[in-house]
Amino acid sequence: MDLDLRSVVASLAAVASGGLASFVLTNPRTHAWAIMASEREVDRWVDSQPVAIAVGVVVAVAVAGLLGRYGTRRMAWVLAAIAVAVICGAVAIVKDIGSVDALIATNTVKTVAAGVLLGSAIAALASLLPRLALVLGILMGFATASVGVAARSSESIGLLQETTSAAGEPPWWLLIAAVVLCVICAGLGTTHLHHHYHATETPGPDTSDAATAEDGSVMRDDNTELLIALAVAIGIAVLHRVLASWVDGYAFGGGIGPWVSVFVSLLLIGIVVIVAAKALGYANGRLILATTGIAAAAAIMFQDLRHPLAEASTGLVLLVITLAAAVGLAFAARWDRPEWGLLVVALIPLVAAIAPEFGTGGFLLYLRLAVFGVGAGFAMGAALPPFSSATALGLGLPFIAFLFPAIAVSTRTLAGPDAIRYAPDTDLIAVPHFDDSWGTYLGAASLLAVVLFCAAGLARRSPIEPDAHENDADPAHPSPNPEPNQ
Image (cartoon, rainbow, N blue to C red; front, side):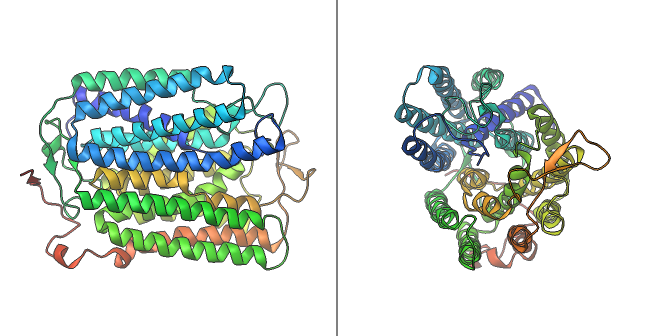
């Protein structure tokens, strides 16, 4: 893989764009109050968050697919720069907003712009290095925003500032870096014709640099791929939202009701993910299996990371996830085995199911985050599909996986408000002390089952075998000569 100025700049732009888009599209379930408003207004603000994010992800799929069919690299970067400018404007006016309705409207504009940014960046990146850099940026933004520190008020512990989302607003250094790099990439872009890739020709991250690095085209989606990806995005977002509400309705309740909702919901999600992967085809369907497993493990990891007693440092979180995800992506560039990455990710819910209090504070918390980052980077990088719309769907899925955080919140509970345990051999580091009940263990075990289910689907490949007309192509050996656009 030859490195040149264009590839390096595109990779930097991918990191900045992916980080910004994922930060805006992340909606952490914080342990703080939402905003300083009446209970009715707070409820409306909270309910609007997942809707806005779902709209943003659907927009990302549509933009990536349309640009992948009709656009050029320059067009994609120009649109990305415009999207970043819109986000900058939304962030700039937040401090002057005086009503909850205006906050909700501004957040919707932000998430739509983030969807445009994500979709444009995906469509603009054809070679391997920038695509892996985009995954790195997404994981960085996802983890950093999930801490929820940026939204906490300095005046009152447990209250958020006037903000459009529970993650707070993205930092200005990231906004400026993203817009500058997108503009530079637009200037370096060209306007050549598209190439048409078949889904069976590039199943993993082995996108041919030679076929795409020297032209200005983006990967071309057929109408079928785009429509299927849009239908899957809408269906999964709606299903996650409905099932999360069902689980939330039983939160902290007793009896068998909560567990019926959890197990039935996970069963439905598993069925839908397998059906969606089959509909997308082998190459395009792998990423949604990988990111579904990652989202399930992330629900536990980030639930612990943002707990007030953990006192996680945003700077350390960013550093750890960056280094760990980079290692995982390096593995992905070498081995086309996303299920291996999911097996690493599975260590997070596995440990939580065995010893809930292990690694909930101090050094071990960051060690768990590093394990998660390596596995997530490996799985996502190795499962990248060739089509833009399928890539947008897969990379956007963790943001709309509302069910998994709902399960983590309702089952991974503290024993009480004074449940603080100090780390061994020190009296300085307080960590959460979890309720020693079967529910705490079973909740983690249910999310572990999701990760292993997705890993098994990737390893066996049986749920998403190539269609009959694809059997002549060997997914493990992509064709070096893509079919030209007619």
